[in-house]
Length: 418
Image (cartoon, rainbow, N blue to C red; front, side, top):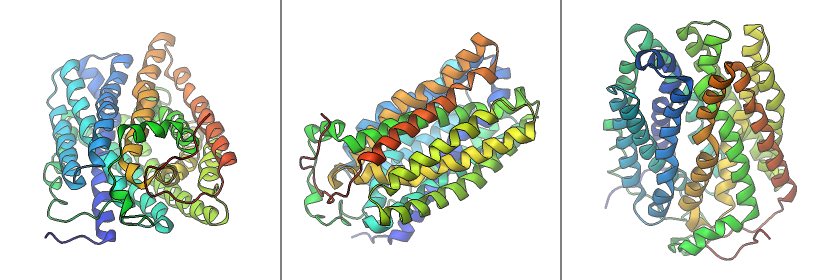
């Protein structure tokens, strides 16, 4: 029988793969300006590229959630890494908008498989007392990968072309997809008190019951508004500083990349650490962490989009992003701990579907369309701090209703909405 990896090695490998996940995703924002120029795209069409990715991502996530609670997860992870890497490489060969949208949709399909299944595997390697920090480490790949994607994308596009940026960053994943296949994965629910019972395969009725769990729905609805804002920020922020503050493409991509990695690393780790300390004192510690940090980011993000002095605008954006990264680990921990252990993959899948279907699937294109209509990118992006305010209000509601509960191991009846 294949040897099982230690929890630490499993987490390290999954985090490394997640790093490439976000590198390949955020290369797009760094090269959007030269891509638009070569292909003759409007802002609305450029925003549609991110929409195509999200369509592939969220439409297939329920399928991978269903499979992730039933099939060996290492094969789903391998398939996901290979497919998104292939889609990234092919993006570099796109000759027009239609085929470009198809290739970015393929990237979304691959990332859906990976993002849906990986947190479940981490949860089965780490008990509840260590799970938040493990997930925090896993998700720190978001800011680091986004930063590297922006920096590499801007540098490669400047010295070669935007096409080379996709080819060079996507190619490594075609081999890295195989890294977990030689090893045995842990049993589902292995770290839960009722680990054996967590092997029970959930029914469609169990999955549907997720929509009646108040804690789960509030965290996901808040996550949806949060993702609406961050998705459009990720797509348009580099172009914003080029067009509004007249930075060069490489300067803007480098600033955004460095800002993302510094604020992301510090914010994600500090947020996860403080949330863990707060959770030890109060059952609503995770919820209050994500609520208050997001609320504090709202005025800072608004100022970053309205101030005239570039350095001051950059400082406000960095401070706002620092606070927003606080939510990265705790929000996903809440999602997993709000549901029975045998529904972890399904819960992540429903969350992914919701946050993208009603969140960043539309936000980049909405901002681009408003920019075309109003002839002002600066005015269009002001809808994003408003979305963050909605997220903060929903998470404050979540914190107010959170009480200590006994962990559930299987899909047994739980308190429902209404």
